[in-house]
Image (cartoon, rainbow, N blue to C red; front, side, top):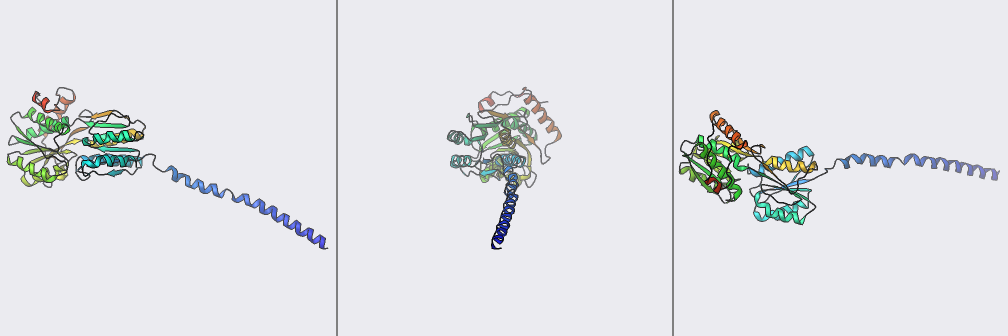
Length: 354
């Protein structure tokens, strides 16, 4: 009996062992199932990253930097990427900001001609990273440059100013007196002289892009010399120019963006639009689409709708708009070649616009 009992117990143990061994593999697929649930989260990660380094003046200048950031944000929204931004408060920040950005993202975009030297150094230091530069050119295989024909857009608002003035005295307020800002000045003066050869154009520079008080001071000084239309190309200094227009009842002309909303009293006659947003967006899209044009320059003018003018305050008459539109046509078809330097302005012969 004892022997038979031991045999029976061994048999029961063997049967239980068989069932237990068979049950274990049934639980094995649980782990792969959990891994499969994690896979979509990995696929959702952005495939690229990018950021912008501002020029001095930074965000809130209601002009150049703000326009550049709009293009960055547009690209970020379309691509599902949260862009990074580093703001420069002084020129000494450029090189460190570009270097820090290059270590953080795939594509670093610097906005401002003053960053050319810092961008050149960064392109050499980080040859495997990609860069974009607005308003200047760096001929490196990892840098894509976008510039504008500011003189062409300025020519149009110059024609508008020349027809809108009552005093025949017009002002120009520049930021820093560099060749790029001189393109705004020269194109503007050429536009004024093309429609009103008797008008006088006062020209002054603030020496900065981040000093609204200086912009206001110069604008008031020009107003006291009878200027009744004043165009600025001075970054955040232009906020002061528009404030002066509000307080002294003359016309201001904005730049880069439609600046009509900056005025509290609708004293922005028009604005010279410079599509910096298109420039930053174009660089990002080219990179995202594997069409990055390193070592090349893209230049945007009237023909490419990279510059132009806006009348957000509805202050430009239909008659003046007709002349401005005709001026654009003559520039685009090559009849008018707008000067880019003060030397070229001296020999510029205005073409009748009709």
